[in-house]
Amino acid sequence: MVQTLDATFALPARAPSRRVLWQPWVYLAPTLATLVVWIYWPLIEAAYLSFFQWNMLPTATPRYVGVENYANLLTLPEMGRAVRNTVLYILGLLPLSVVLPTAIAILTQDLSGPFRSLYRSLIFIPMIIAPIVAAVLWRWLLNEDHGLVNAGIEVLGLTPVGFLKDPSIALWTLVWITGWKLIGFATLLLSAANGTIDPGYVEAARMDGASRWQVIRDIRLPLLSPTILLLTMMTILFGAQWSFVYINALTGGGPLQSTTNVFYLMWDYGFQSYSAGWSATAGMLTFAGFGVIAMLCLRLMKRFAVHEG
Amino acid sequence: MKADTRRLVVHAPMIVLSLLAVFPVWWMVVTSLKPENEIFSTRLWPASPSLENYAYVLDAIPMIRILWNTFAMAAATALAQVLTGLCAAYALTRWRFRGSGIAQGLIALSWLVPFQLTMIPNYVLATKLGMLNTIAGLVIPNAAAAFAVLVLTNAMRSFPKDLIDAARMDGAGHLRVLCEVVVPNLRAPLASLGVLAFISAWNEYFWPLLLTRRIEDTVVQIGLQMFMTQEGNQWGAMMAAATLASLPILLLYLVLHRQIIDSFMRSGIR
Image (cartoon, rainbow over all chains, first blue to last red; front, side, top):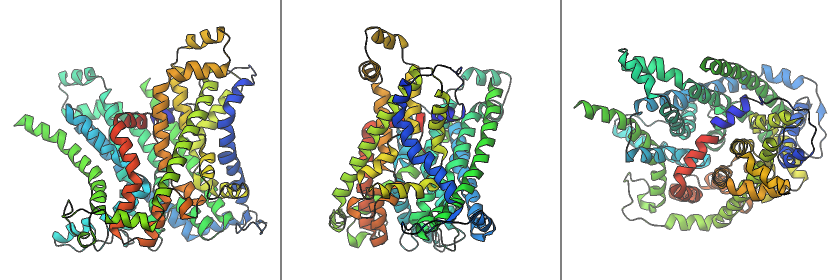
């Protein structure tokens, strides 16, 4: 993750070359052709489609409607709700993908011995579990009538919770399942970063009489900030996309549209109600929105990078 | 006393986190082994374990065929991503040329485009090319991946240039250098990238969801979802199907956990 993001956001710093060569393009061709055919050209097509109305039937011709789709979507309450939920998904995920892992990584930094690698191997497991498997097994654990979690709740003398049926809870259930997959991975990333902090700094601070908390606040957190920022950014940019599987498999955006988000809305417009134009429009709006956010994140990251240097 | 408290503080969060990670998976396996009359019991191990749920799944859906489809798709995707990544990374590290910045930008930014945005044009194109319900249709659009190129580019940057130059002096062509000098020296990163690509292809959900409509042509993730829609409340059978779907990956993890964790941490996954 670190490398991939670094490469994405620290685009070539090498001196530009004027040499015109054909060989490298032969080697780049398979990759670039795949990306252009299946990502960049479709992106342009989606932009084009967003000005049309089309029911996706091969026999029907798309009808040009100008900016009507945009005007309609921007005033649609459905869209407003989806945007609001998207924000809730991201905010709900942050404690699971950033805050908790940071706390755990710092708390457990002195961990050593044979247990360390056992814990590592165990807490990483959710990351390799397929999203749909995660959906299926949490659906069972959280089942209203027979699920283990509700059995426990009943033992405590409380009323069972409709984790996926209660409109005020369902979204948080999906946030939890999305976060369940990430929490161990994020903890390992932060532990690794924490492990590279030079013990000399901590030692020096202790000698100066810094308390444990001061060491964390003034040394560890600042030195962990690139990793923290990275995870925060990943969550903001992709968190709502990660929850798509669970929405589609477990709630279908319901109950009462309480779990829908912009990515589910695109899917819903596209392959449930077959209005390709609306789906593309929602897509373009989302892409633009996240594009702005990505640029802001990029600026923030650059500023941090400068600080470190 | 103080040392004990410290030890508790260090171990307790990890133990809780480990249980949280493992228990749901454990519960899936346990439920899958429970016979019908035990399914709602809260025992942590079935009183009389049975494989009847597995028999039911194998009977209800063409599970073996689905698992084979998934394996073929994931293996082909991983191989394709490694090969295209290898060529692209070679080009980006071997030559300094006009346009290399643009090429790198196109590759690196590709993973920021949400799939939901390109799905309709992709679906239309795949339909035109007759790719619906085929394994090739699942593989071809994913034949190149940004993370593969980036990971291999990084690996090749630290590759000794002298070796390549020496081989070139001996008159070897670029393709031969790539196959006979670079690949043998990059076995470790290539293998770990392959495993990573295999796991993420095995777990892929969205594209197969669009592309496969018949249960005998689908991959295990979508098969599981179809099964859930049909028999969602057959909990034992559901969990048996989910266990079968995860078994290959879990076995792989059992053998290679250290390498898998490392390669995930290095390149991450979307």
